[in-house]
Image (cartoon, rainbow, N blue to C red; front, side):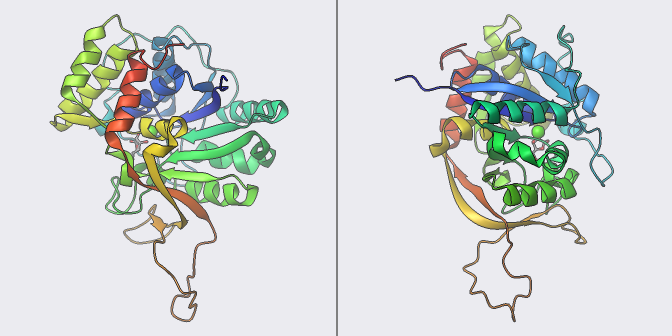
Length: 329
Ligand code: BDR
Ligand code: CA
């Protein structure tokens, strides 16, 4: 019996680790990557588009439509993360621009069209946002009918414990907290299941320097050389012997769900707060329902929160795919 590949769409702010995720999604035979939407985040959106086209061309997947989306968060002032990802947003490798061009549609329209086609086919798509959730909030509020074409959302963002952009908040949620709150609220309203792949698991699937060297040694300006060069860039930037595959972990969840342990937990996004704006407040209490002593009560939205990951298992899945050992397309 052959299993049909899982249709997926990625929303990215490419981004070193978004690039790692794109390579996995474009090359793994169990996935059918239908579209990629871009949003300002790690770098301005035009850089994100350029980087994304470069990655897909390197993977031999220029057939996948890439659309430009929101330039800025709904309310927040944009702040990039070029101090992490390089001046060009993708490791300053100096590789030439791709020949492929961006889809003429706005990202929200591309996602809408893919969802509607998927609904018509009766094969809903897994939506994997790996960036600030601006495009996704706009999509779900503008075209709620797309819910029929989305089987689930697995997003990288948030944390049950610590933050990274601030002590409280993770970058993707901190960058556009309103968009994150709207996305979770809309998904709950529309009955779309959500998994949060946050910082509690994000840093654990790592690529050691030796594996990065092995990837680079493949050469030929192909996916392995790109992936290895990106990991080397991160290792050098942070002076460490290994770096995470980051966003690519959320794509691993689509392929191999047993690699993470999740719990369905009530979740709120902090939209005010002096030091906590953008925090995802994950309620892990065994709460009695005593409203007199907790007037906030329990969040109405429940999300499957990834709390543990088998890091080596996801690193292997990622590297094997990039090296063509998971069955090249
Ligand atoms: C997230 O922020 C970005 O810098 C990464 O690409 C990832 O999506 C981690 O907090
Ligand atoms: Ca990202």
